[in-house]
Image (cartoon, rainbow, N blue to C red; front, side, top):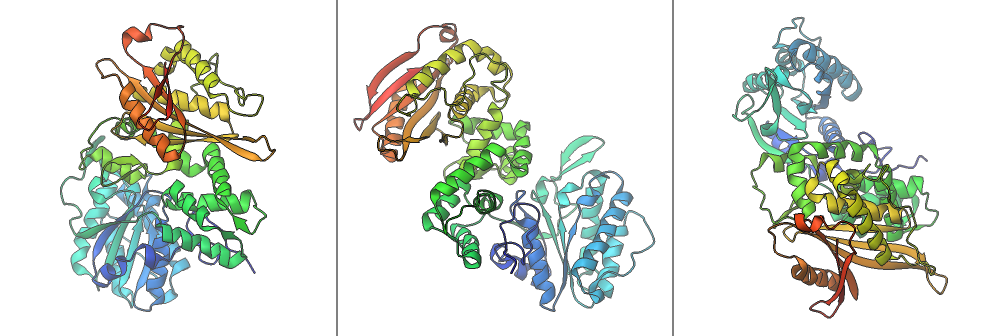
Length: 529
């Protein structure tokens, strides 16, 4: 018997992969199709969109009531301004897809011989006229098209809409990364937005494919248990959900790392296994993470991500195009109160990417495990002292090479910690939007006095003091005290980067350190750099 697996590459195949049924992920779609509606489905990449579409199309066709198929529009990407060439590529791929996914009597007839700009509409019309069932088309990766080609395709679909269901597809679903209102087209080389309802004012609604819920993660991991007997304990499932916030690729990638790469031999998978898998994924930065993080240098993304990383007191315009774009990419999520990085894994990876290359060829860059005391504990005071010296000597060089200049201090400290700890522990990040701070929890693995594995936990809060700002020390003491209370830790470090011009000139002076007591009586070491 072939065992199914967790999938991280391409659409899922039900016989080969664990997956959540399309009916659970797209509950509204069948009713819209029944009502012969045209609508939009959008979701970030690697959220299982194509998998859900293919499963839904298969279910609709198997019902005997529809001829449903997913057609990729991505093949038209190379021809943004050659409608004929793009259409020929799309229809050639459509015929092959139909042979694979539809019975012979539901496949399209020969396409019309004309290769004029209206060919796509004419081809879909002929297919609908000859098909013995209502035709349902899912046009996947529609936003891969651009320029005149995108405008032409949308216009042809609008023009054919009135002839449905016998003379044109009964239902068409446009599927892509973004809602249609945000598609970009190129006109004479100048980017423009489709700000008017035309050329596709026939959509009835826009659906967004959400991330997995906790129950769906339980269901997915439970399929593995049912197939193999290897069980994810409840705490492991909940921890996997907390790290990923249900992002489908990450949920599958964690399980794949544990089951297929780490090859955990036990019948029980624990939270420690999830921790190890998350660190391995973060360090290796799989293709999905790299392609997503390439977007960090997009100015639209930077305008959203940078203030979040800085913990700035900023109110994002809920109708902002930048915010909509960054949300649709899956990099951030909106809550009732604020906007935050989409999940803890992305929090970790984003700052690592921004710190990438900062230490290359720089004197004083940390070496792995260079701050370990004789008893195996992490020497955090020594690490911060060495970091302060490194920062004072390299600050100007580091800031000159950093596109996210407002958070260069935070990113540099995080990169320094990651390099120093390097596989012997974890640095958990929390960005305090509106508090002007980043909260960090270092978890350092070592051997305790009794010879058993132990974890040293150290909490830090990182803030900056800029010219014209109120001294953040007292606010930081209160905020860190609350963080320590939540972590049940007796002490922590408040690290303040003094970015006032007069203070930045004091290069080479001693690290400013003093001890304070928080409102709950916890000891707080204030480190001013």
